[in-house]
Image 1 (tube, rainbow, N blue to C red):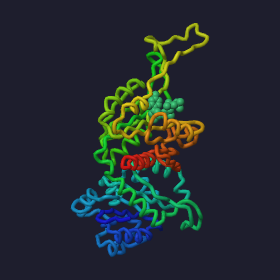
Image 2: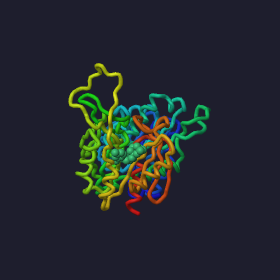
Image 3: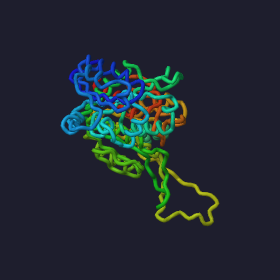
Image 4: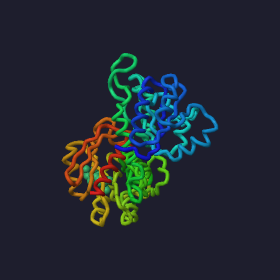
Length: 397
Ligand code: CTP
């Protein structure tokens, strides 16, 4: 692990774990980083700025001053990483809301460097719904979390809330740095969301996909430097910035939009939940219930987008999803083989906090070379990053 020539902004917020930030600053500097510390006023009650200045050989920012424009904004612009350790519940809430009432939170808005948060607080504060909602917001926006860990807390209780270990924080910092711009120059085509197949002018057949997983992939790939085209079914999500988005309704429209971009893509990720059947004869006028005792809809198959493009692939890497309610791995393995994929993301849609509509996911990644990796529950953005890590490895290999 080396941080040679990296510029790291280290935010220290006001909790008892603030003293551990001294060790973090020291380790980063010893491994070659240029470390610039910014503290909240409360943090200075636990550790003095002089301690950090002595270790980092750089001034520590606590209050707004003329240095904001002349030194801190330029620093925010060229920093490679913004690590906040410890991150208190209060600072996390401010980050989630975009509040910038001190130098630390203002820098978090001013920088485009990836944000790595190492929370530390009492278990009750960490598990509080308000804190968890802020964690979800920040993770969805691309922040990475390391910890908290389980153990002794300052209150004397034992529980979740301890600052992650120095080793874990350094590992997470190194991983965040290598993800930066590692997809530069790669053209990624992603499908997301559900399709809609018309029954009549007002009704359709669809499914519970929200599009969140595909949008998280688009945002993550874009943040890592890829050129991203997103083919999206109808969703409530805002279009990801700097991504070329095409909206479609039906499986057939999804197929033609994908075919229009496939040849110029290097990686295709099929995250959309595409209807497998559509009404054979959609009605031009609204279906009336008058005098009907029952209703039978006749359905016919739609095209399989992934299978169709797999037959046309030249150099593209293909990533599919498998949404399953039983025999997860066997079914996913079968889809990997049948659809001729390089990687499949298997999703048990019956688990709580996984699959459709929610912000988290629990997946297993299966690759064409037989590797199987089950990931713990994490935000869809973090799942997206892991999928990109594995896909990058497959492209290189
Ligand atoms: N897929 C596709 N076109 C379809 C249906 C699915 O491209 N008409 C893609 C999905 O985007 C996903 C993969 O195929 O990447 C598997 O989708 P899934 O719904 O899990 O499986 P199906 O192939 O539809 O099979 P089944 O519904 O029988 O499980």
